[in-house]
Length: 443
Ligand SMILES: Cc1ncc(COP(=O)(O)O)c(C=O)c1O
Image 1 (cartoon, rainbow, N blue to C red):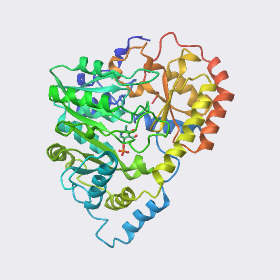
Image 2 (cartoon, rainbow, N blue to C red):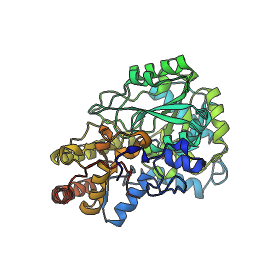
Image 3 (tube, rainbow, N blue to C red):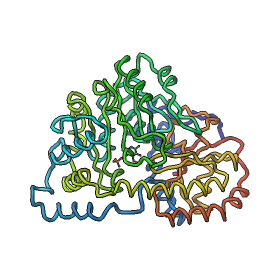
Image 4 (cartoon, protein in one colour):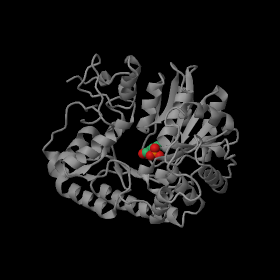
């Protein structure tokens, strides 16, 4: 077995756009060759499939066990079957329903003091995912470099590679996982076109400070870069977080260079609805729209309508949801600490990171395979969320495992019970590999 990590190909070394996209998201089958590459499903889908196949508790994919608030579900159902105030089953306008654009604009004003004209500064998308794709495809010039903090959400790597650009990562280092803005600045070259920011951050739960965001905007303005700021976890900041969420658009001058992306799926625990939005200056939004209107054009008017009501009056859901998440976070963190997995102090979002190096010298990839197959718990190796073609085996991100706490508390407790009872024996049956595996997960 070669210990050289570069068996993960550089996406730009591949000719076909589909293969580049897959390589950028670490979904090229490691068993396939460069001449005949094959694609595997995303790490989330593979983990969920492994969980089902092994009857494992799924602490891998970041979706809640619950269904979202009943009143919101009823609003969407009613919008489909009793359209009343307007058609809800035909194409929505390309920019999104006026009701939802107005609701996003009011919420930004109330919460962040950011003024957005709902006519041309708010664009509804098919989930945040489409907003991210459209923004990256709009601004990542072919042959340019795109900077992001690692680990990062996998769709960023896919879209950057599809755009023909190169992803350059700046690691977030534990235990605090704060962004190193000096390192970001040092990574800027004359080829850089964009910076991708994610706050609150998946998977570290880091909430970026106003000062960190100010410095990132300053760099973008100085070097004429565009920023895509993914804020899908904006409503999921836990009550003991040191900092509140600040939108990038609160930074003076940000609107010249940055757009922010939001998600109703994350905010209201309805991830299947795929309603998101991109906000920013009228000029940048019209540029992103130039791409977005040929991706989905528009989708889900009934869901958009329900989300608009929910943003106007959440009926206490956001507070109740973060309380629930916090109980899950504490339960999971306490259990992982007892297991010797030294979780980070996650302040937002759905995840905590466990460090396997305290209990094994296996890589997180191998650890996760054993966890799913022999312990009955599915989790995600953080290496899957890094830039694989240049990952170093010693990189601390290779030792981290992402566990989701957005699950029913009984499910979390059962996952911990299985780990307490079965993990020691499972690990003792697997002597550490001589060289850490860099595979992104067994397909
Ligand atoms: C950081 C981040 N951005 C975007 C998304 C996708 O959001 P949506 O489901 O609204 O497309 C996710 C989903 O897990 C995410 O974690």
